[in-house]
Length: 237
Image (cartoon, rainbow, N blue to C red; front, side, top):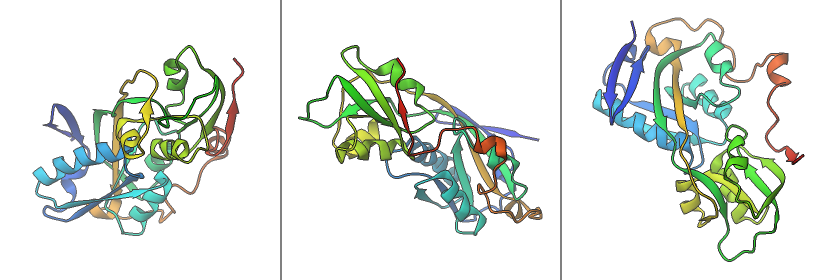
């Protein structure tokens, strides 16, 4: 039976987390680099784990699939994924994974950022992770027109693209904007997000059935679904 714990006003539903041996050191793998919503959610989750007697560490990766691979290889114990991620089903369906916990936590504030002192053109190229791209149209100030979206692996990668001069604007988080020395040119807003924490079956006393490479096998339907990272989406408005 699932158990509910409350920490920092957010409720955590324990699906299998309590079955991980008490006192075990735990490594959480999630999406990086520093400044992502996943990093902030992981830091909150670490506080919950420490309160349960676990020492924890955090590993950040460029893609959720890379984070999942470290879980499969025994280099991490938990994988934290935002439920808005288009390919999260691969983790839910993997026979070697178990859903350990679920919680709701708002992301940091998102907004459109530019490099300070750089003139932003009327037609803008905007870098964004695929999941929050609908927010671009919501936040783009009226004086700008979207030329194209450039899809990248994370909100922090989007911020880095602006810093490198590869795009005009980025949809990113307040922490990533601060780390990259960027300025918001739009209003900001958080996203109320559901987060899923996965662990390996063997860590909760169950046999690993499939030994399948986590996150690597996708159905034809999944492959045809989300727009791949690195694609440039031209505005039709």
